Length: 583
Image 1 (cartoon, one colour):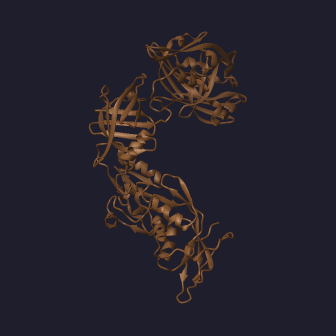
Image 2 (spheres, rainbow, N blue to C red):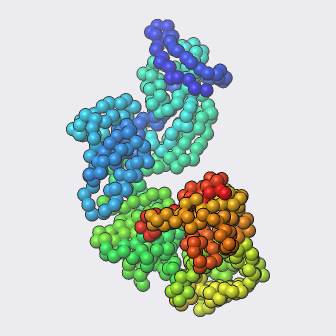
Image 3 (tube, one colour):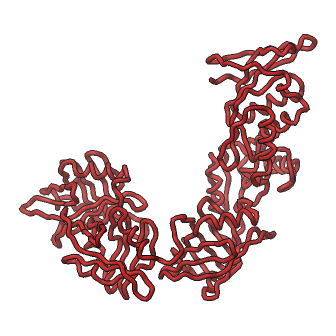
């Protein structure tokens, strides 16, 4: 039911209410006792009123005031770059521009006029910066205690029964948002209306959880208990997320953290430390797993100062991490550390990472999960990656492994062993001597296994097409009929005519074929996910034109009758485009 917010007037002497209503349906209201009506001076009325006050802290990155909010959209200049802010998500755009360089002078210029929403939900137009500054001066200082309650909110709609002086229900008012609730409770506080809240209602905490309440007493208690359950973020330090020491400690200990970017003394060491994982323990110890599988032990501590939240790391054998870092930005699942002099760490949370030593049992369990794609293979620094496009591995019980090649399964054996306290993997497949090395497993987590052998490297990625609706769709489209090369453009050169006399087919068993012009090329194919959808084509020929198509292509577009594939270089530029259409 949706009811327009009604204007209620109390006529002196008779105390009759005039109202207009446009209810869509009837509502059954349980008779309410007079004692349950809200009074102007009651604690519950005050608590509800404070909850309905407009919270202006979310956009402090723009107006530096928690008692006002800027009505979107607006235009601003951030470090000289003009952008349009039309949603709260765009506040992150401003923050990202500010964070691009740590040592620069960040500036935000508002392009006037703008509309400001006040704490009482009224709107006013400001024409210049001076008018905004005057308004900001009327607000309380950063983190000063204020009237509004921000840690809990009503889940709308809610409704009130309105009574006459004989306590007979004369109307039901439906409230859709804080603004309507504020104005209605203002009339209650001014003794212009007699009303009671209709239960049950639902309230929502700042962390997203909800609670149902059934009467006035429960409601008052719930709001009071929630008042201090969150940090109201009433300051202008947009990047710190206002973590107290206790909250920061709990955030760090929640799950392991994996290094995504690393810079020390202006030297980019990301390649050296990427995928290092840290696990913050209760007893001030931190476990770090290096890429080689070694586990290092250090200490950690946090403190909150005028500079913000600080995280101190100390490792006896790892000087690059040993520093007291400023926690300068926290997002859900990501944390950024910084210190002057060109020092920076970006870490992402990964609850699936296990810091403890790799065990044979863990390796065995991981290998039997789904199929495994050969993502990378270098033997004595020579890449063999193309040889394994479209040829996934499947590990079974009893040490049986199968490799899918041109739609057929090549069977072999595998063995998990130990060498110098490292877990190893040896694969023995007919015609695949590259894999027969004794590989040391130095990185293991769900979906990814990295192995090494002296000058050789081997990377496997998990492939579970049965659990992916997008991959199911791609497989169904490709295997349904034959295809022609409608377009092939290589670095601006149109080479489509080289494929004019051919049809291409994708068998469900993974076999790929191209027939025409007296030729019959066979090979393997696989559609897979890796930060997007890809199609691996592996024509087993050195002859043109199909040797050129042997590649892992990004799927740019797919319909039942057309698929567009692209090849990007390391700079993200398109080098080749291949379009297949149903013949």
